[in-house]
Image (cartoon, rainbow, N blue to C red; front, side, top):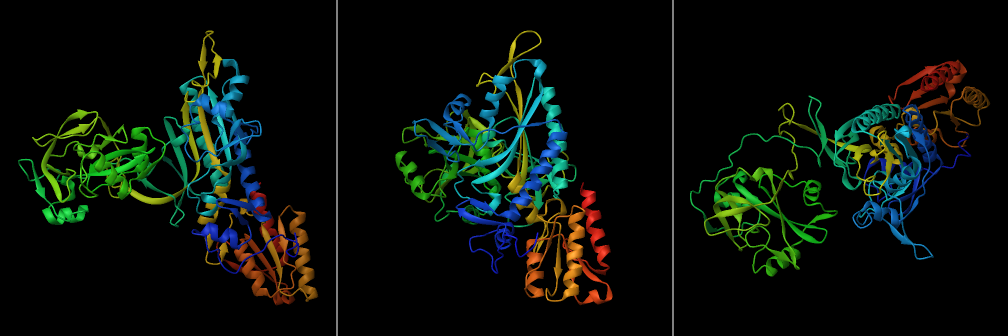
Length: 591
């Protein structure tokens, strides 16, 4: 490819709406262009990268025994109703109606479709196990798309689904996919860590995410890990807490004045206490209804854990007006900072749900809000589990029926497996694997006939890789102040040959010879034949991220060219034939 013909327009500045480096560089280097919020055009350079990631994924999936197919992007409502997800999936599901009035959706995932395919085609245990996969565009109507390709609305994904007759078979395929994923990401030049994760809207009992560890702002989730091998993202991580004082100093319960103590810090300063003896009450809105989370005041709620504890779909913290409305409907005049479980029964005719974090169970003589402005209860204790929060005059607070781990783990807390302090880093999810069990096969009546003649639902697994996310994560992991440093296996082109002066006949002849030699040996190469200053060519080469740059300049009169390796920045002055040989050898090793 000649640079004068390559469809690429580099920019001098980063786009104003880009937050993370992969978004900034992919736009500036001419890989993607925004079409709409969270939707991007993949320009020729980007498409080459994506096809290379796809091919690596395809090769390893095929080697692992999976079979490729392609399912429709538009899906009928009826199948989603069979699984129970049509009403439960939430706002990310883009629903539409065709000209005949049939309700459809744009596929964010394909569990329903693949289960229907299996139901029609896998009738006997003799046909199992089977693993089917596709590589296709998906659409999720993200509330807040951001980070370019890392959290867009339309994206390319590989999703695979396994069908087994036993849990042991699923465990075996789960490990098979784990190994395949490890190979895939290594070939893509990414250092990943498999971490325990939340299954989210996909469902299932066991799941892991493959995270690219990064110290950039693009890390979308904290990853807690230990040298012993434990690793989990923030919405699944657990920990043991160091010893702390969880017993208050008040021997008898009472309500005391605590003026202007709207925050935990202000309350601690006023009472001269540690937050470990305070039970704080946080008001959330889950699927339009209030949920009160009770947790030790020095800890924070992890919202996904809370969402799972109440079986909801969408969650957010309540705003001040909503808190005020809840208080008024229950006969109180309280505000943020003084909220507690006492007397909160209903909101808009729906019972208020309470969830207690495990940190509060053993607390004694604690401080708690009592739904009175400028007042708190001290010396309170738990009475028993019940269906809702409450209190009586003896200072006994009813412990909610739902007690769960809803706490956000923090670095330095103790590993649940070995007891050493946990470490934390940032990670970008590029793949995930789920043990679905019969979550879809049972409600959709997707069954096979077993050896004993009985019908049983398939035991299923689900395995996803974000193709476009993987490419963006590679940029996050491989870049510098000058641009992208693509791993060789997924670079759009392997090398660029730059004649410093297109008007110099010797430079152009040698550059052309090197270029033709590279192409002859299967190297994907570009020759920069533009009549531009050398500095412009060098900047574009670094920005675009060619792994190797061969520069033919004045040194050619001495039989030498400049050879630069983009990843390391190393520059050598070598013979033209040696430069070509280095690149050809590197490409041969990839194959």
